[in-house]
Length: 127
Image (cartoon, rainbow, N blue to C red):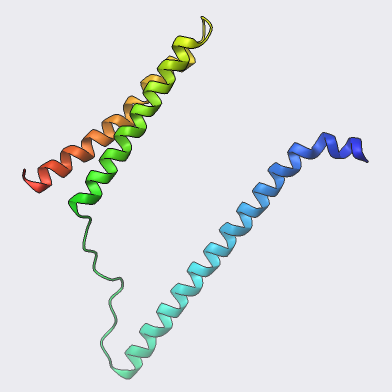
């Protein structure tokens, strides 16, 4: 029995993650459906009483410049961290390990996203 458990130990963890994830997804969908039903009942009750219908969703105020600044800084520094760490690994790794340099170039993607957020923040403020 112990030999059997040792052989499938890693598979049990994976199956547990899949089952828990599936249950969490089902519960989330069920809760969302219940919320929609409650909104529907509220709207029907308002129509029966001749009241104004409540708005579908609260009006959004949008994001301020500080939110774009924060996003820009996070994306930029995350990309720089990927770039610097991957270059360091590539330079210290034995020859023939070019995958680290590929990851270094992948670090340019979040850097570009971060710089776009920073540029948008700057243009939005009008500085």
